[in-house]
Length: 465
Image (cartoon, rainbow, N blue to C red; front, top):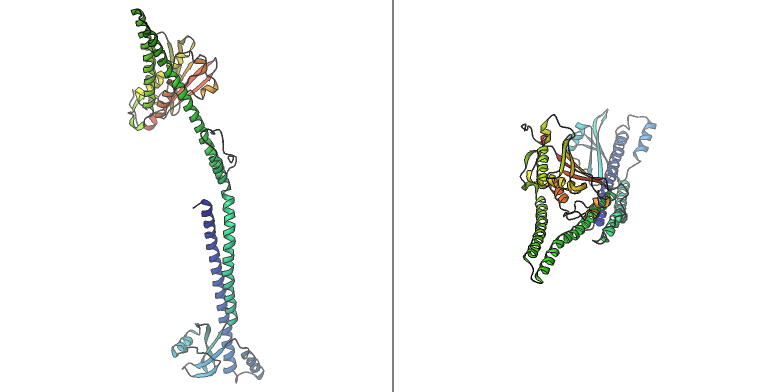
């Protein structure tokens, strides 16, 4: 069932309950008021009958005439009975069986007054004291006029209810259409968006209602999808280029070498060149494998408590072994009094790869590829490593893609590399719930910041290292 139909039915159901309750309350209290009012009129008629019959010899002629006038102002279908307390009938007027028994008379004599119904007839019985003794007066009548009005009221309420329900259904259908119009517009606009039109956005994102919030959320998702598609396209393009280059070089070298017989030295040179290209392919394959491993479920990775500063120094030593002529300066922005604040929880091998990649990148893009500086900073709940170089820098447009595997900025294409280091580092830090941030300016250099949460906040105590 469509939401519009559901809204219409829900709206109609609520109004049905309200109208039914309203009609029942009106009918019930009208009937109750009619019944009480008519009992009061019959009660007065019983008193008038008693005064006219029992006090005729006790009052003045003028009062007797007035009682007679009052007595003959009868109610519709009126019946009056006067009994002695022993059940002897003294007076009877009007037709109708009032269903009087000695038990009923005793009950009236004991209570003083009784009200009850016999079908549509209402009966009132009272005990009347006279100088001749106690008497039981019964008066009854049928409220024919009010019952007809009550029946008319019932018909009016039923017809009004049915008519109101028709109006409610039409109003609910129109209301639901108006309520669903923003969502219908969102659906219509979403249907127009395809993989080739990810630049399109929903138009209802400027308000403050729930539909606007939905449109804003969807637009943010489209931003992420557009970026993901763009990154995927960039990855495929750059990966194809990076993998094709060494393969093309290897094939070319081997084809030229096989065209004719050559000197042993020439074959040695060809084999050496092919070996270098093969090593390059191996590095690329290892990089892709490491990225895949860094994308694993974090629960499958063994974690331990590590000193972050010691991890940085270990990474520095590994980089200097590979590049003996380089210089890496590491210092502290603020050394904490509690050394446990330098402790992080992570996988040593993966975090070592991440820090090594950042340090090697800084050396690679530094002037002459020789100098990089690093600074360890301890904050409230995090520990940071900032690595700076004074190299070519990265443009703001290229900064958006630095975490895309195989992507390389245009101004560093001539520098050896594969574009795997920063993407791999980002994956590793995400596994450790950390972060990496890159700031850069053209011809001024680049600063890469690694952030990891301190472990001391998550464990009760930690032994001094």
